Image (cartoon, rainbow, N blue to C red; front, top):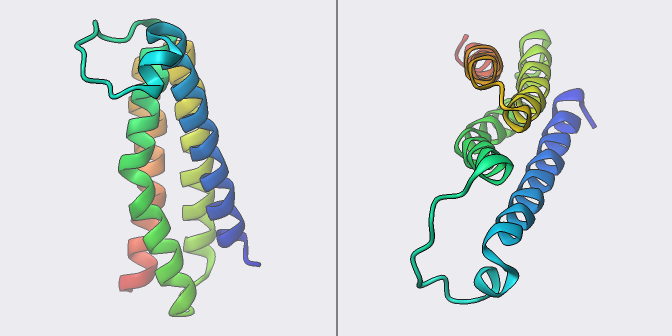
Length: 131
């Protein structure tokens, strides 16, 4: 398995961990009865860690499909190389940093550094595929 595919699998694991953690943190605030129910009733906005984890998970789910599609496209077209290795590393480690910064409440660092670094990883894939 290539480095890029390993980092894709690691990103899937990271996403699942985020999803499970966010789900439980939301349940701690709203109750498992609400989580397991129809969710028809209006509730106040999430607070604190549950809110930050939910936002980080949503953000991950917004970027991950692009990353996954590009990793697979590069792999199946044999365009793997130095740019894709760097792109995969940048994406995975930046997403991990984004999660940690979000959990710790470092909003500016989360967005300015980690979100942009993950985006740079995606852009490296585009360059590798379109060059």
